[in-house]
Image (cartoon, rainbow over all chains, first blue to last red; front, side, top):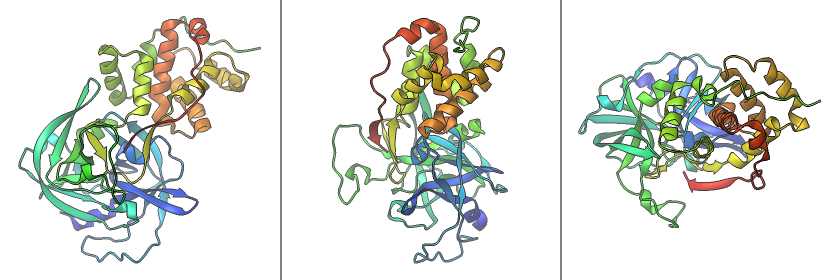
Length: 215
Length: 156
């Protein structure tokens, strides 16, 4: 993987009275726009920001004690709640070191690499690679619309939504992480702000082709 | 004097035709599946992704703003004085392609409610299609939505 990719995968946050709350991950999809999960941004763009990368390369050490960040203002330019995708526009100019593909290019068993900011809910801003493989290809429904997703054999944490999923050794994004499988049921519990239903290795990633359709 | 918007010369589909393809194709699938325009609008604002998934963002809750959007939209369509300047502006571009009108209305209502215009544009288009289908007078005489509210849905 191109180590300079750290320059184009940015954390998403929201400015509030107490500072910036980190929400998740985004990645450049054109010269001036970034893709992320719609459930990260919600329907409001008020206070929405992209955090300027603090490292130039994955080879750099990331200082976890440094809480200072620079940000760009971001606007919601595209919103697709059916596939859980938002496109954010920012006043930047970026070159893409990859292209946007599709889950069709990642067969079951394919090795993949996702890149994002796990534990962003705790304020941790560490760009992290996670290697895994495609465990299954599934169609997830919203009403009568079914969408292609990959099931990744990896456990993800709050903050990784919006992470691009690369096919290993290729400059191609096949999907974007949106969360994990959980059976729908009423109620439930949280322990230490963790939903026990999410503690497993069945991560869902939506096909990148739906991002391409929004550009 | 209140500006009257004329829906008689357009078809419901006219309001949806020029939406971006990714929005139009999903909306058409829902409509063909038997949902009404207002039911699709509610789904668009209240759901994010599949029920089989828990999102891994940090802290956002999906909310249903349909009642609030519909309340403002009703004021615009049915002659509330607060929206006279928007009606005048819309009237200037009323004939012809409908998408610029949708974007204009979404921008004003979105700014009032703190919602991104890109989020509510398809909702505004669906509501305009619903008015066109039923007729403006009939739509405006339907009971208004219960007081504007924000309904939290499943935590993401």
